[in-house]
Image 1 (cartoon, protein in one colour):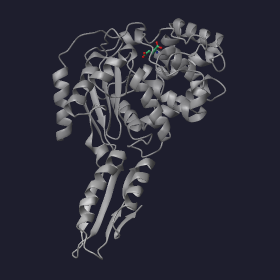
Image 2 (spheres, rainbow, N blue to C red; image 1 turned 90 degrees about the vertical axis):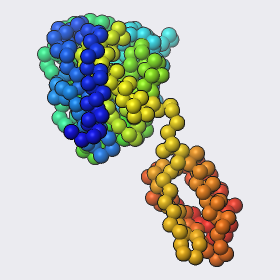
Image 3 (tube, rainbow, N blue to C red; image 1 turned 135 degrees about the vertical axis):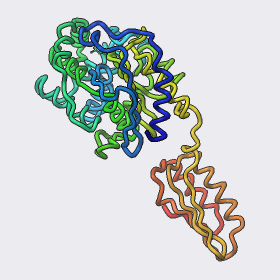
Image 4 (cartoon, rainbow, N blue to C red; image 1 turned 90 degrees about the horizontal axis):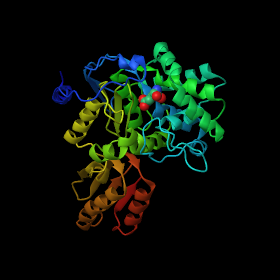
Length: 391
Ligand code: GLU
């Protein structure tokens, strides 16, 4: 076992004895899950999947499909059209609550069932089969392998899905649903019944972490701004009516599902996923949540704590024998980073012998924000002759 996997294994061993909660029992297929199953996987920028525990255990994706079908709708229909059908405000209510906005009838957000059904109605396709094919194709592209629908779970969801049908009828009465009730809910039931493993979920999370490019297949699945929109909504609404406390404790956009799956995203760093069927009173996996919370603490992944890498671009200085030289910038140049670069540069420029050149080579930056480049250029106007910027 490599050292990182060993660290993950330690986290898993610490959490394993916890036995609070119970598997979902509103459909027989979920109630039959083995409550002892526990697994955890992490995928970084090179697409290497590190998994511990029951990582081959298969389960239905359930609500974790919601952010990915949302990604498909955003990609195909654009943000404005999607937002005309569904809001982006946390509802503070359980996943199957009615939560429709007064006046417009829009569901509060795409992570509750009402919102997800509205989003599923935006999936292109003439009938349920075509739409399901689009959904499965999208989920598969995120996971980097061909996924499929568990027909038994689908059938039992559909047979017991009166509340979701009722939600869809309400949506239709407000003119929020695109097309018919049955097409929307049947697509939704099938998307919930797609079979995954914790490895699949970690790759799916990683695809969101890396701006829509699957780090395993290297394929772009969705555009960068779509990935950012999806993560923003997961950040405020992804953990049912526990989303606010989750952000406080863990600090990562996440999505859970009633089968006991959970994924979380550390942008530019990792996708992580956990699986354990026992759920708490909000419908979130108890041990899965603890695993991700422990990981976030231990590896300093809370998004809202200071991260030096954003404030300091990589700088390599090559001094020339007669003074001067080249300063090469790498990584990401943000606004705060510009300030640091300028401080280094001023020191260097002050001691620059007459006739020597100091070149700042910004061509190796992986990403630079337009405002940061404008600020950097403006600083160069005031630099002594001999200091040159190459962008
Ligand atoms: N298929 C489930 C439902 O709509 C999904 C619920 C969930 O995972 O939150 O009832």
